[in-house]
Length: 302
Ligand SMILES: [Zn+2]
Image (cartoon, protein in one colour):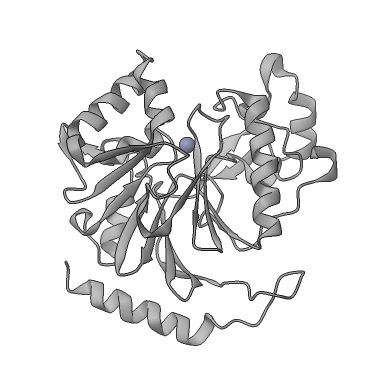
């Protein structure tokens, strides 16, 4: 483990000494709202609770957008609505991975596009003192290329020590796909060999650190959200264009394999996070990829 990891830990502690006791509160007034602190370019830190630190890692080099047309829907049915709600013509987006530090272990949620496609994940990790060999667990929300692309460098595993957790139903779907994405999913799982743990949603003890998997089906057949402690939700790809979709959660991008199911799942989980006053970390949320408080689900989308 690199020497600078200690500096990072000290920096995180000092951040928390000054701001983690923030007194601003949610609408209910029961719980303090955690504060996000910028740590380095494309990296931010959130002390979610006394045991859990979230570090956001932006995989894309620069802030990015998605075109409105991504959200037009089948036969462009939503094009007029999308243009009305997003008059600038595009929607801020990103590709993120998230590192959770808990019980002196490091869990990495998703791995971005990979260096060969310009992914910055390893550079971001390095900027806060971690190498890929420091990662204890890699936990996947699903197996699209912008989430598993960072797991291999050529044919070699990147996270040389990590145990890997994948929803079984997600992997079984990709096994049936002859597409490039399907081939990448199979190649990745085979490369990690017996360090891969395929889990079912009914096995509540399958994951380390008390992390709980929640089926969030729709974007893909095994798309999964994770609950870390009481206050953090790793939301995967529930949203690809937050500024647009928060206004109408029925709008789905064409990346959602089952758009109607994805919309229902999106509304359920944002409602859940709002009720529980959870921090939401989403792989394609704009900015640093994290929402300190869930937006309320618009009434029109209920
Ligand atoms: Zn994605």
